[in-house]
Image (cartoon, rainbow over all chains, first blue to last red; front, side, top):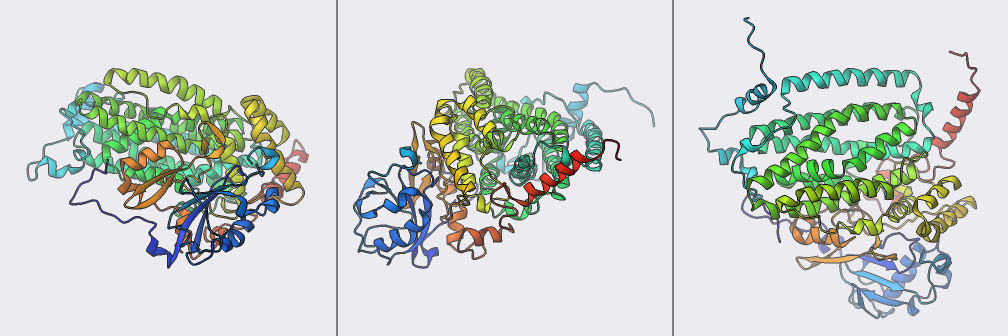
Amino acid sequence: MSVKYLGEAYEYPSANRLEQYGGDINVYVRWERHLMFACPAAYRVPVAMSFGDFVEQLLRPDYAAHPDTAKLEFARCVWQLDKAPWQPVFSKSIADNGIGHMSYLSFSSPGLDGLHGKGY
Amino acid sequence: MAKGRKLGLKERYALMTRGLDWETSYQPMDEVFPYDRYEGIKIKDWDGWADPFRLTMDAYWKYQAEKERKLYAILDAFQQNNGQLNISDARYLSAVKLWLQGITPLEYAAHRGFAHAGRAFRGAGARIACQMQSIDELRHAQTQLHAFSHYNQYFHGFHGFAHMRDRAWYLSIPKSFFEDAMTAGPFEFVTSISFAFEYVLTNLLFMPFVSGAAYNGDMATTTFGFSAQSDESRHMTLGLEVVKFMLQQHEDNVPIVQAWLDKWFWRGYRLLGLVGTMMDYMLPKKVMSWQEAWGIYWEENGIALFHDLARYGIRLPKHHDVPAKEKHRLTHEMWLTLYQYGNALSLHTWIPDDDELDWMSDKYGASFDELYRPRLIYLREREQRGERYFNNRLPMVCQVCQIPMFYTEPDDPLTQCVRIVEAGGTKHHCCSDGCADIFRHEPEKYVQALLPPQQIYRGEAGGARDIWEYAAWLHLEKDVDTGEYRGSPDQQNWARWQQAHRTKPADAA
């Protein structure tokens, strides 16, 4: 389906385009069964950053409030990229891992099931 | 001047609506009214439009002026008698702040939207009904501002509603809802606002808020609520009238109207989550739970209404059964979200007291006790040991409803619901199948959405680099306007005033 409109054409750019990020990209991340972080989180990241640096320098501090974070090992987590199974290489860059603008990453942490084991 | 015969209501209505209208001759009617055809709605006879109230402009002014005099007399009395001291608790004012910031600007937006719709319709009856509603909505925005302004003298967080309307992440939810409607054609606009929102869902908006205000001792809000009530019933009637009118005019209109009802039911439901959260969490004295309200006003009344429309070929809106799966958790999930992002809200958040938690256990039963009560108690314990929880990372928000994506899967309360939709080679994200359907129907429209977290990362929020700088850009003072209620200046002032109020000698002036 598409918009009904008056006039010649209905053509407007997306509001969140790659070229607006100065070489960075906008990505989203969720930690499964840790609803203390109520929503998947939004990031702006340089594509040359290694995936290992991304998870340790950006994700880990964001998760500091959760008691599970001390035991969290990103390399042992089960990852998905855009809802499909995916294995990141931590030494490689964001771009070389195939993560693009508006990608959505999620991971579960076997053995860590949220507060009281109830997904929070 | 000779006195003529007094006109009957019907005759007067005909003269003051149709009688004032004419067919244009210098320009074709289609050129004068270009907007009322492009949506595909076919109207054979505009005279088929009948205003059940037969209200004419002269009578309208008289009625409204009378209501205005009564309202302002009561507001004066409220202000002169320090009415702010009679509310149940200062926490109640978070509900008022949310209304002022989120809903009052919608009244103004409705004023603009109905002015536009009124200009767009070629039928005089519809034009005049829209004109009156446009003026009503402007009046509602004004009376709400006047009623709430008294609280601005005594409490924080009321100061920046107009500044924040175009900037604050949580206010983009109601703002984008209305702008979606206003950027549609006039028939979709009146279907969305007059029918889906005002007719089908309005009880869920006004019942908790106005009854909640009365229950919590807020005379100012209660009074404007009553003053707006007769307008609202006229708006509801317009909503039903416009939908029936479209359905009766041509069978080709039925699928178009159905698609709008599908869309606006879902959008309205998503928006009302904020009101549900207000009911369950922000009212210190509770009226009824969101779950109960949804049961009465949608599952009983709303569904019965749709059964009445079945004779026109209308079925229940798509995804109408999903809210039933979410009704026991919606407000808890939303409050836990507001609580953790309370660092950028112009209202306070808190963990409810034990008696309130007991009320929730009573209303929501096992799922509350299993999932949400332990979370609330955990957060309270953190706060008590000086580790009040805030989330400092910007959330992912839905491309359609713009609500931070806290909703869980309809059949799994432990997994957040994320739907990936694509347009023009780019991925976007929706909070639900309902919002994803709306996106897929008009992707070119929704890719233009300005989502606050993305605006911040693009540097379009005053250059703010994190949530604290962003809050400052909203003109929010940390720990004064925002954050935790306990220990806030509002809470401390309230305690002091209550003490003074209680110890005042009974015979003091």
